[in-house]
Amino acid sequence: MNAGFQSWLQTEIQHLKDQNLYKVPKILESPAGGRVKMNGKEVINLSSNNYLGLANHPKVREAALKAVEEWGVGAGAVRWIGGTMAVHDELEKRLATFKHTEAVLVFTGGFTANSGCIPAVLTKEDVVISDELNHASIIDGVRLSPAEYRKSQGWVYAHKDMDALEDCLRRAADKGFKKKLIITDGVFSMDGDIAPLPEIVNLAEQYDAFVMVDDAHASGVLGDKGAGTTSHFGLYGRVDIQLGTLSKALGVMGGYIAGSAPLKEWLINRGRPYLFSTGHPPMVAAALIAALDVMENDPEPMKRLWDNANKWKAALTAEGFDTMGSETPITPVYVGDEGKAQQMERLLWDEGVYALAIVYPTVGLGKARIRTMPSAAHTEEDLAEALEAFKRVRDKLS
Ligand SMILES: Cc1ncc(COP(=O)(O)O)c(C=O)c1O
Image 1 (cartoon, rainbow, N blue to C red):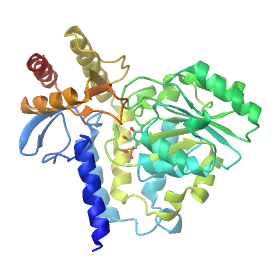
Image 2: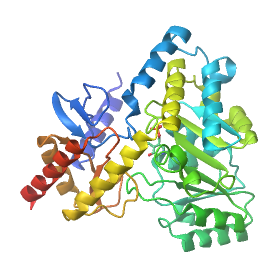
Image 3: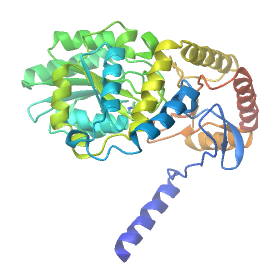
């Protein structure tokens, strides 16, 4: 092994530790759910994106097991080379119907869908205009493109600030870019607020731009049966590119791009993670079809998700916690100071609640919070117990 390289690793790791940015994942020793066993301890899990409880749903499990019997465990090739099985094809058709779009292309992750789609639809004659709180996978996708996109060049607008967006669009028009892409999270992953998509779409139409929305946290949460923000705002046919994940509310794994048939054709030919990486095992696609069946036919999980989310937010607010204007189940509990948020996470863990502190640089300096995610998998008792833990921890800290 190269001594210089190993020593560089050690130095950088120590640097992370010194800045309190070093992460050690806890180990889940039970299936995903409202109450889990983690690192040998039973805890209420408030840090999972398993919004609808589908990650361990009996019908989804059964579909995965059946698919192993029928299809084996691997696709055997990159999808365009011969790794597209009938289940992959069926999943994409089902998703397109669900999203009310002409077509859907599935990638192996939401991250991969962003990093595959964004550079594929841009050239060096184009510009990308982004919300400052967009997710890391959007940022990385944009960085892979040859378009102009930098904050220093003025192409990142203040969070949800439509005047700032319009200013970007005006400047972009003056500069004569060939294509202008506006890109935003549908639901912002750390704050839980919703993008003003109707205003964004209106501005895009006014300034001849096209729109991409990342609905990772809106899929299964907002809109008709969980179809996302485009459905929530009634904007069918007016958003060019919709990204969804299959790993959060749908409970399995993957990401997809929903849009026009030519968009799908283009990404099959130019989306690099699709072109150069093997697709999902067939059991993943089959499990996702079963998860979609549940979402489309059983309104109960989505209702429970929202009941739990509304009650959780109201209970926190009544106790004086600041949930930072969240409009969705993602419920941040504002702390401010980084060290205090991390101490709060540790004390909550001692109380039997797993809820992660989110600190700089994931969020701005001095804007640390505990990010909580109530879900359909939680019972009333889980949330009542968690609330008592939050109150006790606050008392200890103050
Ligand atoms: C807004 C957003 N986009 C994309 C992703 C990536 O999705 P996946 O976990 O399916 O790769 C995430 C994951 O946290 C996300 O929050």
